[in-house]
Length: 368
Image (tube, rainbow, N blue to C red):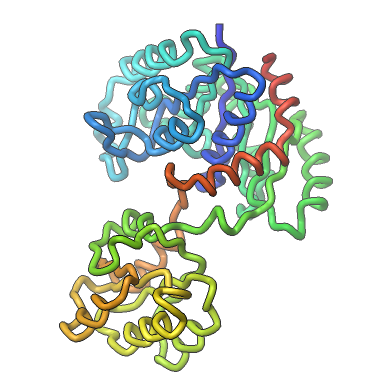
């Protein structure tokens, strides 16, 4: 019979999927036969005839786990799905659906890694909260808390209480995205605070800027925009974002200072002055160098002369309907996921987890 471990985050965007990826890779070195399931997904990606959580596609490809996409992602609730519809769903049938999928995934496996979706109470409308699912499979829980949170340890204690109320046991914590100048101090503080609650600290992962850089294609998907130019270069990574709500002179300074940082500028589609300034800096510094892309807001294409200028470059240009402020806010709140084709990021994550997480202690805690 397979052992289980439930990996969950204390709040969204704590980096749980990256931790899962790294842990699975490390587990495979010892156990070999690993299964993976995300019982309740919050985003849908169409793969063939199935709508599955994109995390499943990443783990399947990066870790070479083949348990059947639909079994690894039995329930997917797309963004914007009406809450009243969720309340009307048959929770008993959903639970049976998750159980059946898990049984197929776990067949012949040494260990099944179960990935949660957000904090402990997510999924409650379906009566399948993270805490409920962890208890359903008697899976010990490892919490991932992002150091970008105001108080990552307070998040841990709140989530722990909810898990325990539902009969699930939290066996450890991993702190993720910790700034490079604080890990030792945070480690001492965290070990002491967690020990008082009977929770071991299993790892501290330092913040890695390169892992947080989105590709222009991810910006396109997050903003649901339309490509005006440079479709072949949407894999370009964004290093820094500049909001073009300034004079061309100030914009020029930002752009020149940002050479080598792969800037993305967000500006209104009628700001011809800023668009031409950005494109000219990219041209001066070599084709596209220093300019990852442009996001034009307001929904209207620039005039024909500007479109002609853009067409002579390889710079990715995305048009969105929303205003500049709303667009910048959405970009700032993006959850940057790893592209399954980005082998550099995947290998970096694997190495980072192996180096900074006590995998041996985890295997001991779950009895594998």
